[in-house]
Length: 340
Image (cartoon, rainbow, N blue to C red):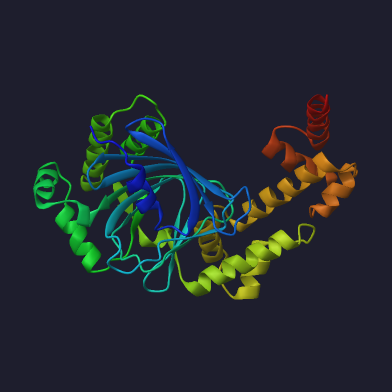
């Protein structure tokens, strides 16, 4: 059995520009908490960490409230890793070699063997939940490479990709691969899991990837810098003007980009078409106002960009499952109970 060493964990985590604390729950899994340097108290990681085989580590957990997390900042020789990264919840943005941006979302996997000069990740301030399997290439000796190769893990290929400083391979996962990743997450949250079980799961996930269960399509995950900037500008305009009438057709005319292309770019970055994003954002804004003020429904509808109160109420009910008045009444009751 491999025991987790506090000294090893401190050395491993020191590559991140974060404050961290951890406690070892068992000889198999450690719970790690990291806070982004300079961040507020609600900007933190809560991750489970294991090392089921020398040189192979698993991290599984949640990043909360962090817009950006600065990654590793060492030299090329500091840490050579190949990573299988699977997104369970939230969205993540990565900067690629050719100046484009890659976007991960739930059900998306990213394979990476790149040199760690410096990496910045944008999590859009949302909760982000993921599983990472990292192969620390310099720590896997020749005997282990031969052994792992016989089990289907190509460490030599990972090393070649690292030396070539290859870019990401990103795509959707099959139902089989998703089920395996979710099972691994459950195991990492268990207090009774052993390293053999975790190692077998690593083998299973690796073999599923090799067997073609990662479906890549560059058109679905990448934006150029210009496309990203336009989408970001549109989102800012929506967020800063919840009462302003806006349409995707209007943005299409403003930027000289077709409605289809603009919705595609927006969906890649933010997960929704522009119309859906506008509706969801305005309803979140309305829900917050309903909870925290005594403004009338008509006032809230107008402030959310809806002159027609009936239309506003219909959309609100579709999203929250109740009318605005019912939502306000329910939340006031809950506040009353909490104050007693």
